[in-house]
Length: 459
Image (cartoon, rainbow, N blue to C red; front, side, top):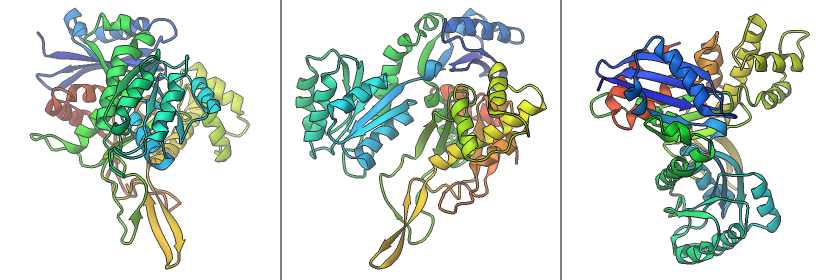
């Protein structure tokens, strides 16, 4: 077998293919083709492979041994149901995002019948049911389980709550038509997260069921395997870049901003503990490797929502250019601008997406008035001292001015927003981070060394 290894990303906008030479630790080629999610993902894959073969001599053995990830058709839609919004519901949300899901709704306390109808209308691929620490409150999770079991519209449920209610929960779901999988409690003790077991179940459910529903099953017969959602691959790449391995030093704590056609995702691999003296942390401690996803900040599928945000932010486009002109122009070219006007429009919208997504990802300081005077508390991660911001995704990789766009991830006019203050800016210009993440599952040193060769330093 040759030293070549092929990696595929079935994206919602583009299908990407990357080929590495693992023996020489080189990037052989990287191509993309518009995804064909609405018809057959194999059509887009075939076009991408044909393009790759123009410069790289990949053969059928290379294709059969390929590893793939997917966010086609929007990836996993998940709803979280928990006990208290700030704790078990939030713990479920963090677990879902870390596994690559897109959280489309959250419900807390005892669900009403009308809330169940609201949940059903969201059409989730998976419902994550949490609630109660181990040995704690059982009533709410049992009530909510009965609501979910009565639904004839839901498909998959993951239960990750109070283990003391496990036997009764199994009895409740025993006669339902739902596919129910049990995992360890996401918050076994108050204030302590344990999200990796849920992450693993979500990824397994994605591989076993969701990919078939998205029409990727036919492609799986040709290639090695679809092993995880794309965001999970990117998060795996970010972790190996930050932490390094026993043999290869990493880059240290970092933030990754991945701008896509459907969402803008932000990843941070950092502790994020309070940096200022006298600041107390409130809420759940956030995971060391965290992902947030902003479904209203995509540069193609969600242009309408992004333009509405631009209007609220009073973003200044070219004089005389209407909202309809901008939307029509960028949609016609699949988000790849043609000409100076479209280039400027996309730069402004891309920076707005990056700035807004970073603002939502990082923590904030809050001033509370107590009987002893003012007290400052921190909710979320403090990333002010973080030294590396890495840009990824098509709108950044192929941007006319990626540094202008990426600088939206740092600094803030509001000192309460805990964004990086003075980071260095790196760019995944070759758009290979997903492939690095997939490779890191088996050969992390090679993955890290390859990325270091091709990452671009912007400033």
